[in-house]
Length: 473
Image (cartoon, rainbow, N blue to C red; front, side, top):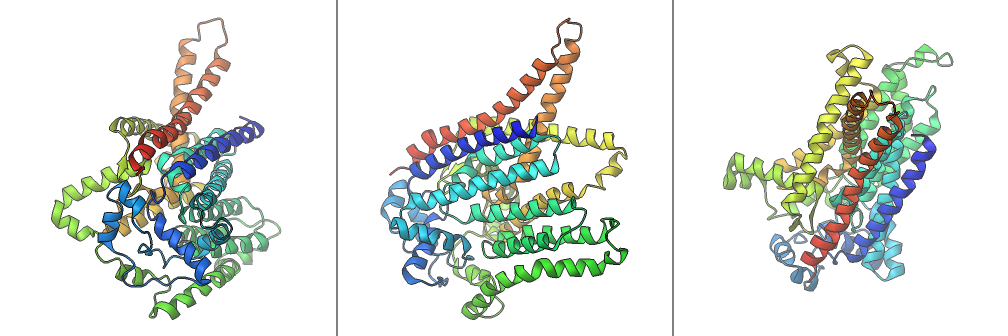
């Protein structure tokens, strides 16, 4: 597929995404998204008080939250004022939403549409990352972008009031800049400064950014300093620690200048060394279910079973405040699709290792781009597991910061399986006098597209059959 045809296809993906995202923003009942009232109250405080909120004891009431989310009638009728437990969060998303709140008198849909727009930018970033890593296989970039656009739970989060869309976008932009540094013959200072600014904005957005994008940037700078061969224009002395420290300063001085403003404020407000407000948050969320208690209640086997089941279902779609799953048949279909993708991806990986030579040894000498994508997934999964060591947060949406590499793997897996089916079909039809190759290629593209059209259709089905009927008061 040519780059021009891929760009045109991306436009259609974006049109479908914005149509579905707008429908979700308009039709999802108010407050029927995780933590949406607390995020809304943060924005409201900025508008009314012209200051950043401070997380106070008593702003997390587990009993009130349980009652608030127990029925759609409760969610629609009970006050959202007590729900202020996001007041510790970094402020960038809320500052962007503040003028929208002020101009629309707090219209929830208008603020949701900001998230939809940020999610659209994330879809574009996913496409460019795929094109950067696999420039000769634009179908991978399109499949990864479509996956990001149409996973139902992700779409629901991208059309709700929360800071996830901005955090995911900034993580993706950080990765995209790192990938482009790998193929640069000369690493220009301007690119490093731009990476530092992106990192700085991420530090002001969400704690997720700290344990995903920051390590990725550090690994990238280390690779540039210690692994990349110098060009004729680069003196050999620029390699090693000297180059690493120089690039580190260029990138992280602007990043830390952004972050320091927020950290100093938190040190003054919360005291001690609580630069992110996390210690205050952990002290405030009294009553939140803990893993230690669940281990006592359900045992290790029961805890693991609940963790895996809920994570899987809520990754694809478990709406509202985790109260509205989809029917089992949807999860079975999605599971089969995932297994096919996984088999195909492993098959593709083995074939690629064989083509490049080196066998299994090649698996331990990944390209810089593959290393970054793998690290992206690992860091996100480890962060998710670490959070669940203390609190019960079995929600697949916490894996969404790594949705782009997961989407690329999904697309690669499906394309590999379809490609093998095409090759088998071509051999079976080889005795025919007719040239079936163009038809088989077209069939491969159509079936590949149908996989993501199914996800887009499921978005609409989920909204009309599961979200609206079950979450409307």
